[in-house]
Structure formats: C-alpha cells, structure tokens
Length: 273
Image 1 (cartoon, rainbow, N blue to C red):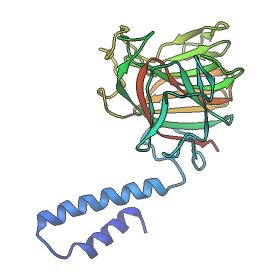
Image 2 (image 1 turned 60 degrees about the vertical axis):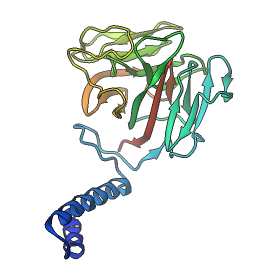
Image 3 (image 1 turned 30 degrees about the horizontal axis):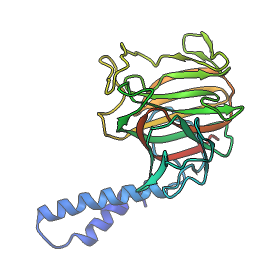
Image 4 (image 1 turned 45 degrees about the horizontal axis):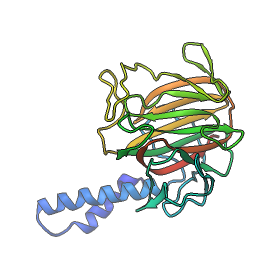
C-alpha cells in the first residue's frame, strides 16, 4: 500500500464524526505527520533537488544530542579545548557562537558521498569580522594538519555569496569554465558561484541579482555531491557551483566558526552507490 493510500485509509477510519471544517483541518495535520514520519524512517535522503545520485543509508554526523562524532579545534586554544562553548548543542541544533575562529571536524574520512545539512544565521558578528557579511562554511576533502584553515575545498556559506568554492593551502579544483584553480600554501582562492551579482562585505548583505539564501533567520538547505573528484554544491535546491578533478578528493569534513553566529542541524552524509 502506498503512503497516499495509507493516509486515505486512516482518514476514512478516523474522520467519521465532526463537521466538514474539523475534518479538513485534521486531515491536513494527519497527512503532514505521516509524510514527516515516512521521510524520517526512510533509509534514503528525501530531496527535491534534481540530479542527486543514488546513495545508501544515512551516516548521521550529528544526532541532535552531542558532538561525539567530531573533534573541536580553535585557533587560540588548539584541539578539543573549548571552555567558552563556541560550539554547543541546544534543542537538537549545533549553536556556533562565532566568537573565535575554529571548527568542528569529523573524526572519520569520507569519499564519494552526498552531504545534506541545514543552516541559519544568528545575530552576532565578532572581530576580526565584526560588521562584515556573516561568514561560515563547510570544508571537505580535508587533508593534513589541524589548523585555521587546513588543506581543503570549501562550500562557502557567506551572506551574499553562499555557494562559492574556496581552495585552501594547496587544494585545487577545475571550474566549470575549464580553468584550474589551486590555493597557495597558507592561503586560499575562490571560484564564484554561478550567476553571482556584485558583492559587498557588509552584515546582512543579499545578492541583488541572484540570491540563493532565504531571508535572515530562516533555515537554508545546503547539499554537496562529492563523486570521484567531481563536486556539485546546491543551495536551497539550486545548483550553485560545480567543479572537477578536486584535489584532495577525500578526507574529513568540518563546519566553521568564522566571526558570525550560525546554527546547523540535520547534518547527514549518504555514501554514493
């Protein structure tokens, strides 16, 4: 029996009393609840995004309770020393204060996967980026030493330009235009997302031409397909950037604290088949 048939059967059983308005409201609530339950229980990711490859069951990076699957690194304090709780779990969400430069990083390496996560901005911005466009990111294919910032390709999360690539500390990628871009040692270079408009580094900035993010305070979905060095980055279901021949092509994954308050949730990875 399909999900729709199950919903209709339950609707017929339950809604035999009451006026039409009550039945309509209850029916809507039941359908929403059952649809949510089906999505949660499914071993595969639900996504309206096109071109997501076939994949296996989820690897849950964050279970809503603790950060046991991650190490914490702060520029000023090193590894797993976070006395001021720059990273903390609140109500099933990772709250990143942004007050220090650093990250949470997976303890495992990954390759060939589909990653899906959600983020929303908080309010605060902090030195050295106080008053500037809120900034964070998901760095992946991380190799080498723990530092700010390690060798990696970055899915940039930044007001007005979420979806940019950044290649850091020797990481490289060939953009859609065929140009190879490699980050210098100890530094980084970017590839702009598709159809990017003019950008200003001011807090609250939104792309006047092609903004991918939802309004401030709302949750955004970011998705990454990392397949044999071919990477695609999606923001709220839209393809924002694409590159090939990524170096490195596998490694750890981190979520940044970079001078802005930000929240993450539903951080899951799906191995590609």
